[in-house]
Amino acid sequence: MTTGRIQTYGPGRIGEYADTACRNLRLPTMRGQFSEPADAAARDQMTYRGFLAELLMAECEWVRKGLPLCLIDDSGTGKSHLLIALGAEGAMAGFRVKYVLTTKLVNELVEAADEKVLTKTIARYGPVDLLCIDELGYMELDRRGAELLFQVLTGREEKNSMAIASNESFSSWTETFTDPRLCAAIVDRLTFGGDIIETGSDSYRLAHTKARQQATTAS
Image (tube, rainbow, N blue to C red; front, side, top):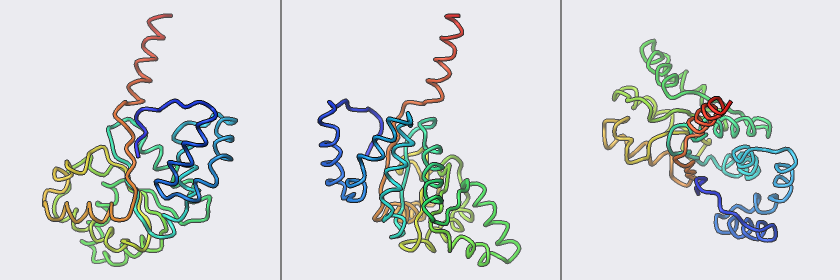
């Protein structure tokens, strides 16, 4: 599922296309509720990401089933905004949600291990229905940090949902997790039975900066 290039459809075909896509992706709730949030998005001038977040959270089964969700692609393409939006929608739907940066989580786990309270720290993440981990793959993790993160992911596998955002493709994660076997195990935990959303390669921050510069030059 990608959000790179937006295909244009006539008004009469949008509903038909959405219905077919939801059938193919096995998203029955989203299929049944597409029209109402689509009308609301048009009325409220909602962004594409906001609309996508609304639709994904309407399909609450992935959270209830403890399945993972991965937001992958280049920096500046809206992954963090979408991750936060998903978390906010999840919280409003009654789920227990926690958002954390990868480096902050790993540092917390390392400190807990040093202070002999690792089990207690990991247990705090257990009751969370949806754990949103941002900026995974931005920085290299040493083996100890990667192993501690793996413990958190393993403890949640098929029990509670995880949603992650990364600006690196899975094939590049060996630069973050330098042990190939550990890297493969982490990718497996984060993708098994879940969904992968590619947000494209066009940086919205860069586009905004260029537009602002052009406006300044024109004025």
